[in-house]
Image (cartoon, rainbow, N blue to C red):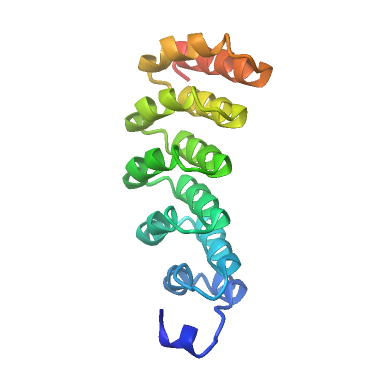
Length: 176
């Protein structure tokens, strides 16, 4: 906690965004006074897509607040740095399904083959939206190692998962 936090100063995320103040926004990720400030800072860093934010956003994947965790995952996907893959893969096991969904989406945005194994496991998630977006992510990555798992997901009990798996299979097979 910094001195400004102790004095009750709330970071002005909108002002930092308008100035492109990445360093200030990364500091705002640590603000303990209100999780919505941390979540908004994470969202803004995703908009700015600056790789200097990656380390701070990775720490936010372990935040107590779910909105901070899913906004951090979303931002990491927008930044697209492969250094985030390992911790986003861990976030695929978060207790909150919405965080898992955003981690899967981010991994698809990054398109690193190191995410294929964790995304294949996410095709078995209890939440249908996580399974659906894991399939989309595997399609975006395009690694043939996912073919068997995607083919199996075409038998999922949920139509949206079956459709996502079918589309992902087509993408992997076509190489696009």
